Image 1 (cartoon, one colour):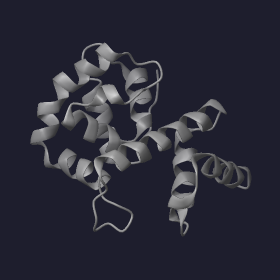
Image 2 (cartoon, rainbow, N blue to C red; image 1 turned 90 degrees about the vertical axis):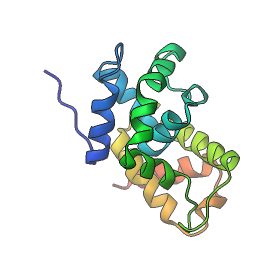
Image 3 (cartoon, one colour; image 1 turned 180 degrees about the vertical axis):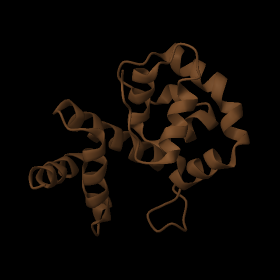
Length: 157
C-alpha cells in the first residue's frame, strides 16, 4: 500500500487526472507534479509539455498526457484559473511575457531538481522557495544565490 499526500485539493485533482492517462501510474504522476501545478496546467492547456523536462518521464508519455488531458483542462475553469495565475507577475496585476515566464519556470525547476538531488522533500523545498520569493528584490537573485539562501533556510529549520 502506498500513501500519497498533497498540499491542496488542486494538487490532488491534478494527480487524479494524471493517473487516468494510460501508462501514467502514481509514481510517474508524482514525478510530473514536481514542476508545480501552475506550470503543469499551463503546459497541458497550451499543448507545450515537451518544452518541460521531467526526470524519468519520456516525450511520448508527455505527448499522451497533453493529448488526453488538454481538452479536459481547457473546458475546466479551475484549470484555466491556475494557468492564468501562473502568468501573473509578482505584483499580481501585470502579466509576464511568455519568454521571461518560461525562463523563470525553468530556473525554478532547476532549483527544485538540485535540492531534490540533495535529498530534500518537495514540500520542504516549496516552503523555503516561498520564503525566499517573499523577500524584497528576490527577483534580483541568481539561481545559485537562491539555492544558497534556500539551503540556509532548510538548515536552520
